[in-house]
Image 1 (cartoon, rainbow, N blue to C red):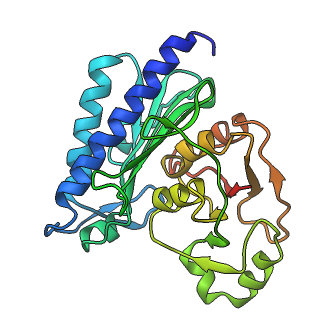
Image 2 (image 1 turned 90 degrees about the vertical axis):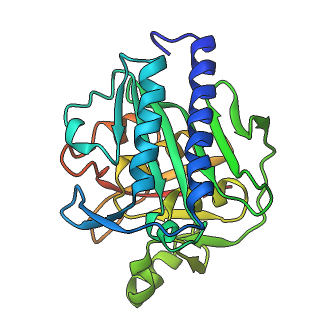
Amino acid sequence: MEGFNSLEINKIEELSRNLAFTAGSYILDNVSKVNKKMYKDGTDGNKEVVTKIDLDIHKKLLGIINKYYPDHEVLSEEDINNSNKIDYKKPVWIIDPLDGTTNFSNGLPICGSSISFVLNYQTVASALFIPSIEKIDGKCISWSKDNGILIDGMNFLFKENSNISFVPGYLYSNTKLIKKYKKLNFLSEDFRNLGSITYEGAMVVLGNGKSLLCNNPKIWDVSALIGIFSEHNKSIYITESGKNNKKWNKLESMNDIYNNIDKKSYKIGFDIIFINK
C-alpha cells in the first residue's frame, strides 16, 4: 500500500482493534442503564435516534486517533458537519461509534461499533465490536489484507453453519420484493432484521448467517465490512440502487464504492450483499 509498509498497517489494524474494544466498553457499561433518546437530522433528511453514549464514544475515539495520527482525516456518523471534503485517496478513519442505537437505548445488546481505515480508495484495515453471550467483554472481529480475519486478535477458521439472511426491515411488508429476492441464490428463504448492520454483518462473518443485504447504506455502515468480505472465502455483490431491473455484479474493486459516495448523504449509491461462502 503506497505510503504505508506492512509494519505500519499492522499498527493501524491493532489500533482499529483497540478503538473497537474502547467503544465496546462504553456499550457494555451502559446498555443496561436508562439511556435517554435524542433525535438528530440524518444526512438523508430523516430523523435519527442518538444517545449521549453515541456522542461520548465518538469523542473518545476521535481523541485516540488524533493522538496517534493527527494528520489523518476522520469521518464519523456523529460529526458529519466537518466531513464534507473527505478525500478517500488520503488516510481516512471511518467510524460508526454505536450502530443499533434504538436497540441500545431500549436495553437490547444487539448493537455494535464499526471502525475502518481507508487509503487510496481501499479499506485497508477494519474492526467490528459486538456484545456476545459467549464472552462477557464482547467480541472484536478485525481484518487487514496481510493478516486476514482475526477474532479478538486470534486466527479465525472460516465456518458456515447458518441459512439465515439479514435484510432491511421494509422487505417484510413487500411481498413482491420478498419473492424477487428469494430468487437470488445468495439469499436464503429465511429472512431476519436485527436493527444493526454491524451486528448482522458480524453474525455472517462468524457463520451465524448466510448473507446480509443492505439497501443503499451509508459508508460508515459498510466500510469495515467491505474489507472483511474481500477475503477469498467471502464475496460482495452490488447493484445500482433504485433500479427496477436489478443486475447484480460481483464487486471487483473497492474504488467503485469510494468513488461513488454521495458527498451530502454519504450513501454509497448501490444496494450491496455480503455473502459468507
